[in-house]
Length: 535
Image (tube, rainbow, N blue to C red; front, side, top):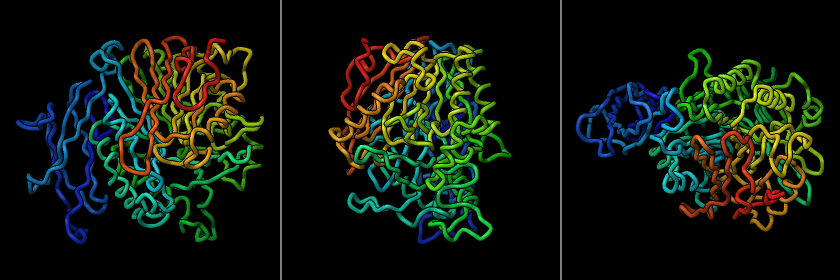
């Protein structure tokens, strides 16, 4: 598998676990790679190298293949240094165009397509969305917005997807879970066919619609609803942490998760002295900047962990609350300004949680999203408006439902017109889960979820489309003139298949900073639109 491409280099990853009952922890394994320009991977490679891996890093190994040509497709294969007949499947990757490549020439003059995913829970379904994207779309880069793995142990026996081990706490636990996830054929195929750009596993605290009101439901991960100093069920205390279901303190659990993440995913370490920093920026020619944030782990102020809901509600408007921390916020705003100054056409922001305000009955439904950090949201919107930084698109995951919105100050219908979109400063595309259950009801059909979506789009001015039944993903097809977002719905995740359909398509034209009207062409195959956009 491969990830974090630059214009002249890319990371490639494999695991070389010794055959037999158990590896000798004292004996390293030698792994080699060869890189070619054609899928036959024959003849003289353009690059090759070898390295040792060992038990200390779970027999994983990452190479940075450098000296490559920008905006070019490559193929690679791994092998056992001592036995050249022991080889891996062929992987396909690519480099990015150089930062100064004219927008019209990026990707050889063809539109560039990103596939965007989040929330893949092994025991609740097969990862068909990954396979569908790899087989049935033209996506050149896969972007993952969090929850690549889950730490809980809910039963998946009914579909043959029971997870191994226990609720994750130690480095062994996390490694075992990553290893099991990689047995899914669709995930493996997707990793072999495009470079991935990822952010941390997030945690989620989402809401289940029942009897016309929202009630909370928790799913636990590295630690449920984590922030910089704690979680719902694992917090550092002077009396120990045996009360936690994981049996682990927050700091120990977090460091184990971070270590396994760096071992098992082809993600670059941004700085050598700060392993928690994964916020980074990719300059993809003059076409776009893809900015990946960490709105969960790095320096997030206290979040809603259920028992402290009233306290968080009381401080949600506090001016000094931050999802990212001061250092990351400063870097983020500077990156947006630099992107405009270098005349990149688009600014695409990958981050974990829903940005647009979502209310129901006049009440905010989830203070673990940006709604719990409203001053932080206002600072970002103010920066975009004041700097006239247009063509901005925010990507979001975590909620297990689809939401598409214009970006504007919440409930500001004086300068923003929900029907025409005029007055907006950008667009948010928030995607559903690969498999994780819907907040509108696990396994609920469209007939049950569409009425809920209707309430949401009627209650929130910025929100233009809501859909809560299907699991899936979306793609962004980007060129100098427009971004085309296509949402894909999987028909069935209870067995491995590639049965899906395009449920909705949205267009954002350069310079308009809003969804083109009529929104989604005036009709969708799933979910609910606010209106046909004709006024």
